[in-house]
Length: 564
Image 1 (cartoon, rainbow, N blue to C red):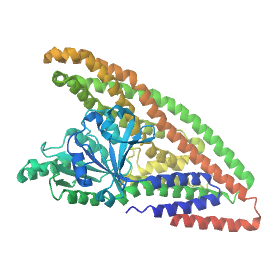
Image 2: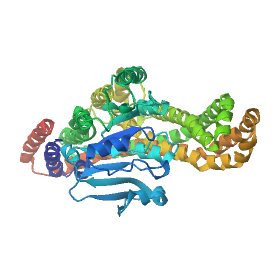
Image 3: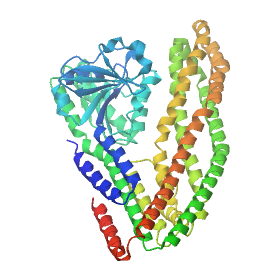
């Protein structure tokens, strides 16, 4: 059972100390955390190819036929399973609203506005694992981008994965391997179920299991648990329960939730330390210090605007042309293969174009995020923030924060661009007094990558059908060489042209989100320090005999917070 109460108790203690010193930002962070903590639920995603047998396995696990086992790709949704004695189906819409559904099989016309379905079922196995929400997902090789988006919404949110493989196919598809390599950056709680094993004799099943185990090890670098079963296996429920028990719900919770308590704790300690170090200054000195920080902030924000313009010029244009060139050359190299696919089915051509272009976009967007962030941070001129106070050792703070970030990276809690070694970071921090915030911003900015990729994928879904429709008649009557010529002269130029016209807006939005995140965090730190100094100035007006008691009280509170 996930222990949320401990974090609720810790966060309330931090709120009490924050309220004592009128640190309103701490109270806001606490309120946000309590909502996230209350709503948190670990997820187990059943993933795999379309018609791999995911829904059939889950129906067997539930103990009744709740999920439709023969849905067409167009009517498939991510379906969450939760326990309730009162069974019902809810549709979660893209706008956040929720509607009750009488029959999930009648939703095909509503597909575009539905995010996912929630099935409340009276099942002892679902009740047994109350820490998890099991999710039946659409096949990620269905060719529909809506299904990819349905999967992406769960990545990075405390998720474990059960990959379902059809024994009759005897292998793991390329799309499944690509998916595992993507999610392994966020979660190592992954297991594999080879189903429909009743279709093969035991010796063949064992050979398939060994082959798949070795294939996954070679592609992921991990020895994943692999079981074999079928819906006719009398031990299938017990096997699935063992897989679920093998996941660590508390670890997923701590990785995603407890780390946020620690961040608020460190922020509170920093604020109290600034108050303590500034409390011995007279009013005039503090006012001068605030003015100096305000001036430095203005210089910094001006410099940020200059860097923003330079990034747009140097990186975005280069990245766009690189993407276009890569897409064009890759498609050109596969013209003959695309022609053969086109002669088979125009719809399969559309699916294959998406499969080719998708990894190119992912790779370049990740490179774009890393290059832009590194260029922004490394080239930032923050010399105006030097010598803001000998009592505030920002260099030491930077070193401590960097080591914590490095530890989180080593444990795969976050993924951080390669921005330099610890010694270099400490040197930057000691000279500027700002490095700690910048590098903390870098790690939070990376979360933008996933959300920024989705709009570009949607472009493919928007313009590819029009291109394919123009050529359907041609492909139905052409030989392979004529089809290849049509792809080279018509399809590829139109794909490249559409990308060239449409890439600017997604790249600009991603860049703006990333840089604005850094800017907001920089200003938050400076404002926090200024507010702390203002609190200290207010305390200086108290009677002199209370001053010593005040300093001692802060130290006691700092020691208390460190122990929370």
